[in-house]
Length: 221
Image (cartoon, rainbow, N blue to C red; front, side, top):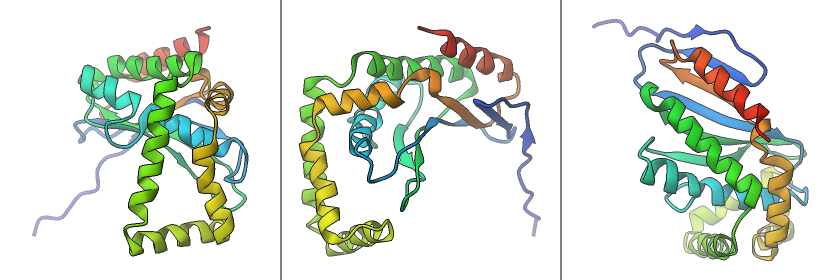
C-alpha cells in the first residue's frame, strides 16, 4: 500500500494583519477575512452584530456576498460570514470564510472588501432588514419542528450559561432589534480597515500583491 504523505506547508512572511501559508498541492486558496470583536454573547451589541453579518453573508444565497461575489461575478463557489469563538464570558471574532482560485484572488478580494465597505458606509437597507427578520423567524419555526434540533439548541445555550428564560429572551432580541441598532454596530465593528486576511493554498507569487492590496484598504477613507 502506498504511504500517504502529509501535504507540504510552507510558512511565508507574515504581518499582524496578514497571514499566508503556502500549500502548493491545493488548487484553491482558502481565506478567512475578519477581526476580533471585544464583546460577549450577553453584550447588547451581539445580536445586532449577528443580524448585520447575516445580511452580509448568510449561509445560503440570501447574503450580499453570495449575491455579488458568487452569483453576479462568478468569483467563488461559496462565501459566508460567521461569529466564532464566543462562549461563556468569552469574546470572539467575526469572519468571512471563502476560497478563490489563484487567478481570481485579487479580483475576488477587491469585490469582497467592496461589499464590506458598502455595508460599512450605508448600513442595512429597510428592505434587507425586514427580509432578514422573516428569515430569523422562519429558522425558529423550523427548529420547533425537530425535537432533536431543539435539544441541541438547548444544550448549546446551556453550555454558554443561559437558562431557558434567558435563551428565549436572547432569541426574542432577533425580532425586537432595530435597524438603527444594526447599523450602529456596523459602524463599530465592520470597518474594512480593521479586517485581517489569513489564507492557505497555492499563494506563491501572490504574497506581495495581497500585502499591497491590504495596505491600500488600510489607507482608504
